[in-house]
Length: 366
Image (cartoon, rainbow, N blue to C red; front, side):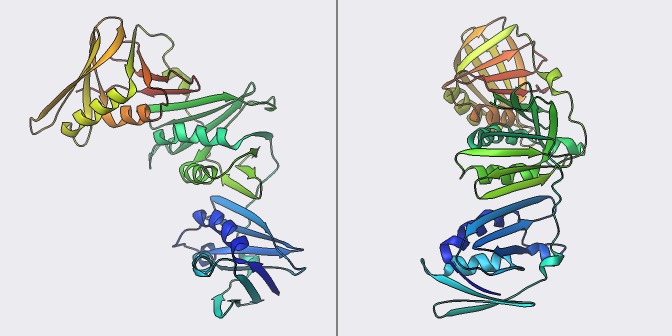
């Protein structure tokens, strides 16, 4: 099979699928990209058996065929070739040669029929939503996912659809981040899926460069999301997500409204002298201010104060400074509202400019 394609027409879809292809694989063919050419259309696919990315691009010619070549070597070649160059491919069973101007390369090829087939299954729920809505959902929650937790279902993101709304939830057992928004045309079904951590991070990377609408197709074992000329698919985590709604405070006897930038600055400064392992910081909340204190095993101490609008009785509570900072950094408004049930209860952090985001941080003993 012989065909030609412009460098830019090949490089863009290749860059889209390369993120899922690991440099070192247990199966050599997983280091390759699957390329299928048919009737003026090229499709590139990459997978690590858990996540699959597929991108399409137009090309001239009537040739058809399938082959695989080392993905990163092909991308490096395309990236280093001059702009506007035309690549001429000559595909043979065990090798692929490509030429651009006076540059010529020969790459090893593996049979396309040996490339793993990613089973999508019949969709149980299908809906369209703005790609940027999905991006914001991931952006506001992914930081709270667990990493290598024995509770495997926490090493991912819960995506829930019900009553015309989409909800994203992430938690590592010490904190929880929640995003919720309405979606027009949502199917009248209630469904919960858990997307694994790697899939969440890869999807967030892709969505950063996508505008317009996305089509979400949820099957029994995977979810597939289509964006224009490429698609993303990931196998779901089996298991049931914990009842996260139980940890969301329903009432608050103490409410604090504080400037987000001032609180973030004070937390960052005080945390310097906190315990390096636990990052514990004490918040003494009284009338008109928050006093922050930290100390470490070397008996070093730090203290700072931030003015705040406080309603309720004075109290003190301890938190992991890193968890508080992650939640505060995800807030977009200039001020942040912190609601407490009691001195031993969790803290609900809310964005005053957007009610779609909520963050819960569990306290710690200091």
